[in-house]
Length: 142
Figure 1: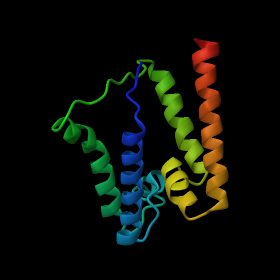
Figure 2: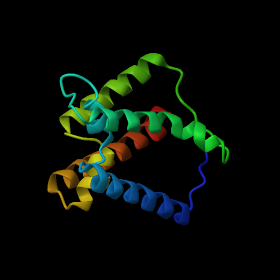
Figure 3: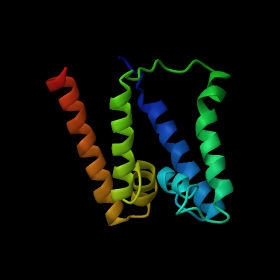
């Protein structure tokens, strides 16, 4: 699978993500960590006043791809058809965000920008794990 990587597009994407995180913090007063926002939609963490914010984020995430297709073609994607593998992967991500007290957006984008040592360690852990996983899947399993 080939991706179209350009430094300019990557820089623009990073700037948009950073701007969105700053606007979210300025407007709502919370870190723009997806797992934390979504978890506050569900009991026992459901919070009064944050439901509308969480729901808006969830709807935005779900509508992003269909809205994007109005302006251009989505890049080619491939997803495993192995349902047990997808379920296990989803559970591992959920457990990881719970154990790590956040996800890549919360730690990597928002935490590091606030110079959080905990977020730096968490992001390094995410990245090292990702590198090892890709290596194993591309060079050992394949």
